[in-house]
Length: 623
Ligand code: ADP
Ligand code: ZN
Image (cartoon, rainbow, N blue to C red; front, side, top):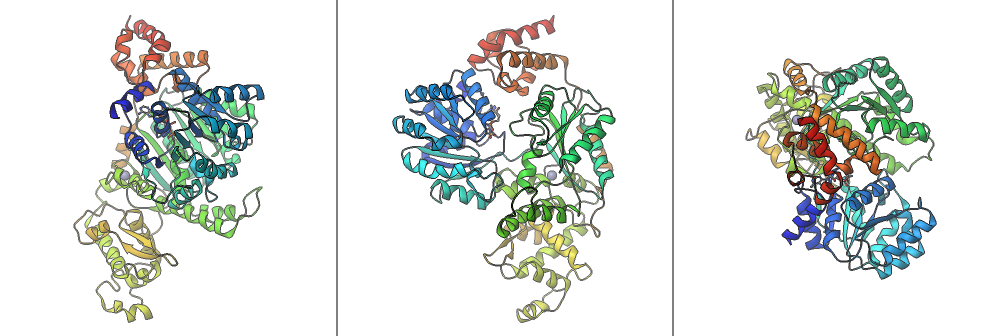
């Protein structure tokens, strides 16, 4: 089987698997069911495209994103794989034609928009064509807790039950355990369905969170990030995205940046379709330095050289944040993510959750659920341990943690003198000894009381007022201890358990830290909540080192060629070639079709289609 996998991979135009992809495909083939949780752009589609090439019959892919279906079908066609899609945006004649092709068994893959699932003719065809695999993309759309609920997805359960011989792959980038469970239940998959959480690690992203006290500090954060990464307008160093919490804020920021000489545009759902298309087009073709947008921007954006993503305010959850900041550095090169937040964002979000604009008031349960997700993000932003590892831990991707990424703001701060000094280690051990004493018995409040040395009936009854830990942090305010406990949770040293009332627990790692057997890499909370980020020497040096030199001219010439080819073929640029591929071309400078084949990302079909054009650019450059 492994030989087949490699051959199919080459057919799809890739030289090697990304981490987790082979495991996902093998698990799906062997166990017939898989829930794959990986970030957008993580390469989930390969995990159904590749089995689709190997299995007899027509694989069904359900996806709500028509533009994405279109792109994938075009990309597959460019590699000679028969694929098509059904969506209500197609003319009736065209739909009929496509269904007929499907009915004749001519397709390897058929992509379907969820609303098609209800169509009688489609159901009819489905009965006749063997289906070896149903892939559900954006599977979280089936969850009413999720941010993207699509009622049409509820038809998937019955559909999967009907196709009892088919394997099932559910893909999502949204990873809260509650949503994962709901996906399994509603798709009718057993509770022990294998789940693979992978690809969340983005070690090339330097993540930072800054507590700001007002608009000026936000603007400074934006300006600093742009200067650090893009250096100057039209600098040829890629582009940036500034996410704003409101349309108005996006417009203001765009105007401010344009006044500052940047090629800036605004993008939000309140603009006409034409202005949105123009902004997106300019962004994709390299005509902009920065786009200021609401979260309406980004679905299906695949520009690899976004060097910075700055948030003027926190989005609704860690998932939402990581998805947005994850649009930076897709090419694997250094990129920066800055999240600005302020205490004022908390009441603001609460209000927004309880009284959403232009929507009926949600149920109290839903409000609480979303509030908890938002607080997770704030806790992360406040957190005193590696930003990168804390996010992976949140997603349940422990396998990919780095024990300190070395480039986030916390790691950099820990790198210089004040970091894991004896004081910080001692504080961590004291806090954790408090957790150990209430382990699986009491919650946050009792732990704070214990550490503060406040006598309380239950503590007394349990003998906890006579232990050495009682009053171990007598000199600290309760609020500080609570924040320190929160940081121990993000660091993976402590956690919560319990169905009705959450009680604290000490993790194995936390026990090791408490005993001094593992390093305590953390920043204890400051006495006062930080007003703005610290600017140590080490940090400034790191910022400077991160600024990249301009790209070489051959690479730029190859990119121009790619844009021309993409326009001529009417496909997105990445279908022609990825930046990574172009970079390899610029370094290797192949002189023949033969040599081209050795470049990763250049499958046989691509050499035929685009090889000559790229070879010409390289030859012209050499001359
Ligand atoms: P997702 O569905 O997880 O959002 P995609 O499947 O669209 O992500 O993949 C994102 C990009 O990564 C695509 O352009 C795809 O061609 C590319 N890709 C996926 N797997 C590989 C691989 N093994 N090698 C190189 N590129 C890959
Ligand atoms: Zn880090």
